[in-house]
Image (cartoon, rainbow, N blue to C red; front, side, top):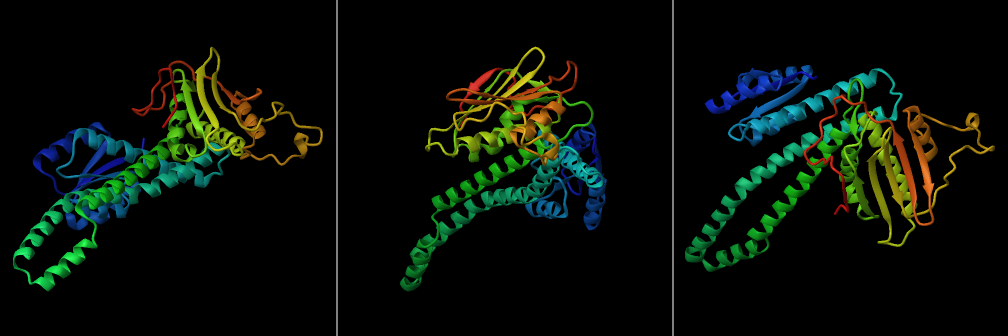
Length: 383
């Protein structure tokens, strides 16, 4: 567990009491510092692990994020839930930094570890500017209504007292500016875009999180999360149907499972690329068997060979096979190393890539499932 520090300089009596209650319960050190020593205190805390900063306003929050803190909560806007969310996200980012340090000292042998490294770096680098953008959206939301109200008052006064030439000039300039309703739409679109980017960034960090010890990951929720991550890309290329039955816990690391699902999706997308627009179909399915978990990605595109054995002209010893080989044959070898199998089932109108993985043992603690993950059986066509 990463070391967490919750740093604050000023807070109301009620906020201070809330911090003193929630921080120890969340495993965080509560550190009060004076304003003149804030920067050095934040940098020292960042070196130790994850840092949550209690900012007094939006400008102060931007300053903390620019210094590299992991999460920010604002005075007067805190709750037990918001502090706990900030602690969880800060812990995730701090663990990602530790993982990158470890990987930097020892060459990774698993492509899942490489995926974890790339995704955690991307998520970490995106999170800070996105957090700053969210704070700026909040500031605009608070300031624009008052500014528009002042503008209307000025127009009213100008109508009554301003000389006609100046009044005509003022009205001409106002006509060239966005109307209040247009400004509202612009701000709404900006906030929606930033919210989407923030969600994707945090989703990417969650998918890339590697566990220590024995793995137990829900294939069903991972399929849902990978689809959500790629949703905008997928919906322009194929109609996607998801069918999951139960949580489908597998005994592999999450970045490795994400790599398998994304790679098989990429093969399916390549196979349907030549189909007429609107006719491509891709299915993602997860189900539990007695001694295995089945993850199936089917498509109605170009048929693939069901025989994955090497030909006489391409024996194993002569081919250039590397750890990062993401061909169907390469994925099959990786599945076998994990105690599983990858099969290609070719039918007249459908090709199915069936990944068979060992189930996680009963009693193992699973990775926390996000609220939107649903372990029950369901079939749906995502929007």
